[in-house]
Length: 457
Image 1 (cartoon, helix red, strand yellow):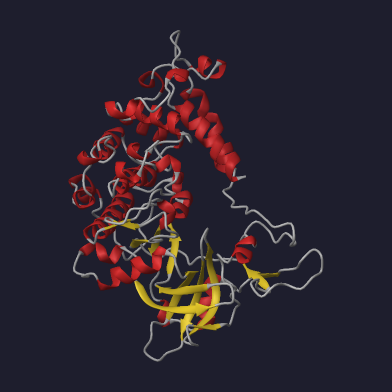
Image 2 (image 1 turned 90 degrees about the vertical axis):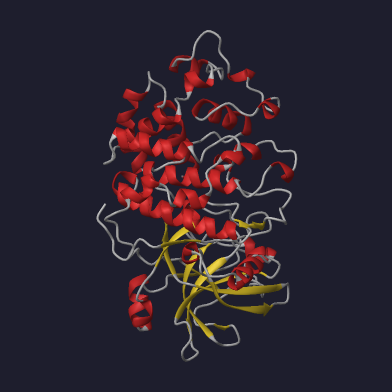
């Protein structure tokens, strides 16, 4: 279902930028909005199907996940597990209660393989000065402990409890996008957090709306029954082998449906600092490759021969894409393959640097006879990029108007002006995260938004 909706949205959004097709596509918007985002996982044939919300059981078999049960005492008995908050590609996150008097109260615990880079980066940030205003917009490590298991060792990262991520908040907002003031507030906080990371010599490498979460407040004033009432009683499903054999020691007895706390304010933090060794990195310790989502990759990452061709400024490009999504409800780019993505960037932003153009095959996109919507369906040759993809200023208006919202065309043009300073082909010319955070357009429009209250959309 995910791929169907995303593919459909990508197709119609791309066609929406074509002058001949835009008017007729409005009728399809209710259909596309009615298709829900689900996250089906891959399953091992050895086990009963547990439903689309359950984790991938093969992750336990391979040692990526550590088996945890409700009520478990972990961290030398200091933390009692109460509920599950999330399943990730490389770890699970659990809600727990710190049993030590005067401790942290309710916490989230992320259990990762001991060699995961996230533990090292979070420990380093713990030693960094907290005087930078962006430090409060990056997930902070409260405590950590080691779990020794038969297959391997794990690190328990004790973190703050967060609520929904920005992707979910944007999806559920009116028109599927944030209001002018809330989008400005959220954008500035992400830019501040990213500037803090960069000042500490760390690149995130995987910045997107799914890795930005809103904070919770007031949990430690509630008892366990009240907290579980907010999340709902844990829903569990027993794990059974289809051949009837007993479960291995690496497999939990049951799985728990993840639940997220509702959003109660507009303070947010950047999370997931290095899910594995190919995401977040120190400036002086770049990985050879990185798992940034394709549509968020900076131009210098496309068909790069080595990591020498890119650096922490890939985060700035991702920041521009994130800001676009907060206000418009979708990413500015959708092409899944390097050649097509570079072609799309060329049409919307600018020409690629001369030394990089030869790496891409644009010939198959060029139709000398025209570039109308009909030729798009007749062949892959769809004309010059400027004919097919509108400039950023026009694309952002077309994407925004497709479903609608409160921003005027003048405000959208001003937003495009900000993005023009971030989405720059030459990484050396991109506006730094700290400069984005202090941009006059964001500061002017976030007035009236209150990070402690939920302004109406």
